[in-house]
Length: 302
Ligand code: SF4
Ligand code: ZN
Image (cartoon, rainbow, N blue to C red):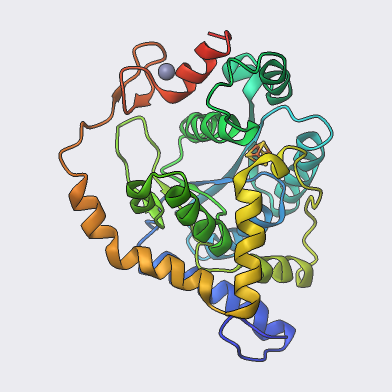
């Protein structure tokens, strides 16, 4: 078996190399304090469940730290309900306390209902946004609310190297080049109501995460979300995988390129208005009205 570095490794060494990579990422970016309460965002897919297993192992060496899991149920019939079972089962096996929040509870609408609304009234979807665009904004909010609910100091996301490279290129393709500066291993506390986010898997390629899960016999949901194919990300994934096959290391190079220019990008946006509180919901917002409230208002939900 071949690790990302190109080395040939046995199963045991491969598994340890992934754990070491995660430990190194955590240490390099100073992601946790020894007494942190860490909430892992667990969707039930391979990345999040694998991260939960690795962090549970690491956390066992830090008696003052606590680990819990949070799951967002977006309300995607036949998909999230399945994934939820894997999230619940893995948390049970690891003895990790698990909290589930739902779009229905928080925003009074399930993603399936929201998509039906979009399809019925194309005019309201004048921006041509995909279900993922709505889902992403609402899920980020839901995760922050869930992390606060469980009193977490940090929210650990399972974004892998592929996710990060895709997001960087997608921001450029969306004409939002300055946003690439925000694709980083640690998203600091930008507002008292914002729970800092960390990405310990950020330097581990998706294939290696999958292999790790397979070797560890970790059970996860492998069926893709029914809306995934509608997103530009899906095309970006295919494109990057093709390039990576021919030119190994491309995804890593994309990530490292942004690291080199991030400080310059951040300096160029300094002076922008700090986060305020949304005048409708009171949550952190870049403008007077936060993105979730704007979206829900446009859909006639709020
Ligand atoms: Fe949400 Fe899109 Fe992910 Fe499905 S693929 S869970 S719609 S972001
Ligand atoms: Zn709001």
